[in-house]
Image 1 (cartoon, helix red, strand yellow):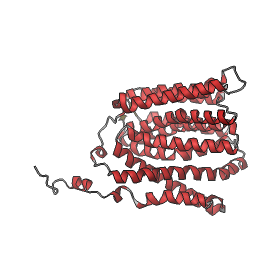
Image 2 (cartoon, rainbow, N blue to C red):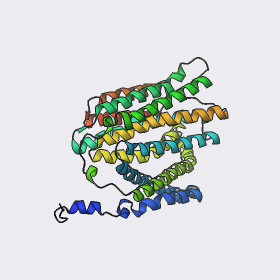
Image 3 (tube, rainbow, N blue to C red):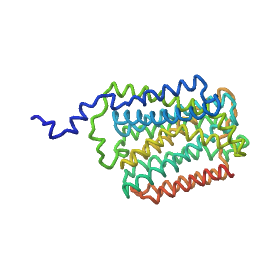
Image 4 (cartoon, rainbow, N blue to C red):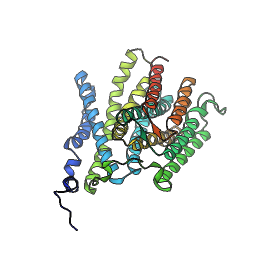
Length: 374
């Protein structure tokens, strides 16, 4: 049986679509420009250089989002959402470790502030903007409840063990762990994250599959060649984003201190830059009525942030004998508890409206405001 192309023109176009259409030329140029900007020190060339570096940074972020979506389409859900989450987290760990070794800011609390900022951005801003944007366009959205319940349970356990429990141990003074305690938390964080990935990708993969139909599911996936190029370009783009963020951090730090703001604001800004690719990818998925994909990406990133970052900085701290304070203060504990509680309620029915999105964004606004005005 033959298919008349004239009767199904869209299918013919999809099947014969050249790779160059899947990988626009600007998405290949932007990451390279990011590396060039880092090598020539563009951010240090006065006001115009800083502005140009910011533009290149935004281009690298957009390129990373596009390449991540190409890869996600090729490998399918939920493996696709793991690509960007793990890649960004690995680069984030490299950034934190490099800043710890360079003694930029307060190296003792740098990892804690960065991880906490990332969790608050993911749990409130990314999820909030996705719920709001998706509901505004589609009124009510649905997702698989079992997967979100599993992710929130693991996230709550890892967050408490890493960021709250250090405040109440007595082996050392202050919000710190003893060496044996730090290693224990690092190991259990890896175990929890590894178990979650196993459940998400193998044992209960159906818990994390989109529950709504989408035309993208029926489009032909990109070729292996296009996927390979996209993967390489994604790595370059992520490296460019983090290196540019690191290069711009002294300028940001000087501006923050000059404005009389707490130094923790720098960590929030850098965390936001590093998480920008995930934020845009999750937002675009929610707009296409693929809220399950958005939540997979958001919560998967939060779990990877703790499950990979804490063990990495713990090893660096123990090997190099660097002080590491993990416990957050009472204000931060309150906001973290509120965020986890509200997320459990918002994602506890399998469907969402604009209300849940607004609530999460309000909590994020409170986090930002109390960070600037502690």
